[in-house]
Amino acid sequence: MFGITPSARLRPSPFYEATVADGVTAFTTYNHMLMPTSFGNPEAEYWRLMHGVSQWDVAVERQVELIGPDAGRLAQLLTARDLSRCVAGQGKYVPLCNHEGVLINDPILLKLADDHYWLSIADSNIWFWARAIAAERGLRVVVNEPDVSPLAVQGPKAEDVVASICGDWVRRLKYFWFRETLIEGIPVVVARSGWSKQGGFELYLRDGSAGTRLWNIVKEAGKSWDIGPGNPNFCERVETGLLSYGGDTDDRTNPYEVRLGKYIDLSVDDDVVGVKALRQIHAAGPSRHQLGVVLDGDAPTALGFLWHEIHVGGRKVGSMTNCVWSWRLKKNIGFALIETACQAGDRVTVIKDGTPVGAELTTLPFL
Ligand code: THG
Image (tube, rainbow, N blue to C red; front, side, top):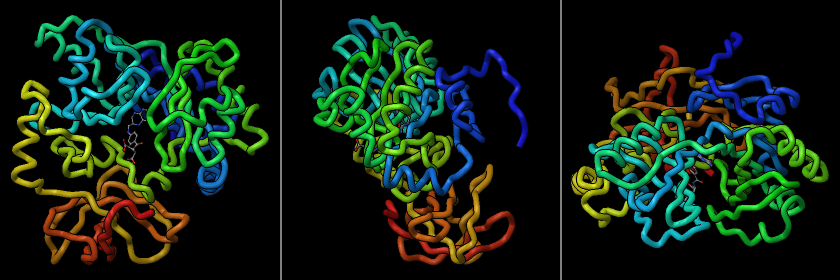
């Protein structure tokens, strides 16, 4: 569309040069960085993720590091998911809420040690938030950003590729668990995780000067499995129902509205930020919920910048928060954030760029 003017406010990824060399054609902004969103052939990139293996620059998933005797205390205050049984080497998906129970981020928490945690965050500033909570509660913890940049290896062949680099122990890693290791002398944390349902790993690079080297080690090792560059895949994540914080949420979305209730433990201590509000929301029942939308017709289309209104009987009942052509369903699909009175199976009208389009609500995930 346009060029991008570099600035010290826009932090480069350690993998930036490597993705440019590999033919990146589009970026989005996320956490004040650029994330590749296309290498020029969306359909080929999708099928490679489904059947093969793909490597992604996800350095935008920046780490909020908590270090100090009260690091575990702060981690628990920041999320209403019970962390009491989380051990070093384990990761967990943890919704963060404000005092009103509104979702403000949905990071993966990595517990490195009793006094050392990372929150691998989605697109909102959690350093401000964590420092403010720590200071207000008088905690002995330092909140900083370490030199850490995730590189995702995703797809059914990802395990073979990462095992060929690190050894067969990676095959025994459980979901969201991780281990620190060296790859040709480069310090990394290897985790079984990633923003797709096709399986895979994330290599958290711990030396930003080695980005190109790590990218090329993965690229070289992956050749036998026809690895290629990719990015968090929009189509796959909509089909499989993965949430995009900030994309599918607004500034009043609570976890129950967007299928994250299973990650909330209402029995955590009262001083956990937001838990009192979450108890009330849970008791009253949320007013909106998240469903799938399948649009009539078969012409590929995109959402653009804004949510699209969803109407029933001429009245707005919710919004379509994303929209993508599904290569597997051969339909345009998306998520609805919609009044709980609307249910799967209902017919609705989506106002797409001023034009009404018929659609049906479904349960999530689609696939
Ligand atoms: N990797 C890393 N950090 C991240 C993301 C990532 N931070 C931001 C963003 N992505 C966080 N969002 C998600 C959302 C869903 C999942 C992971 C990160 C996920 N969910 C599984 C699911 O919904 O089926 C399993 C969750 C569970 O049951 O515990 O994997 O991608 N480093």
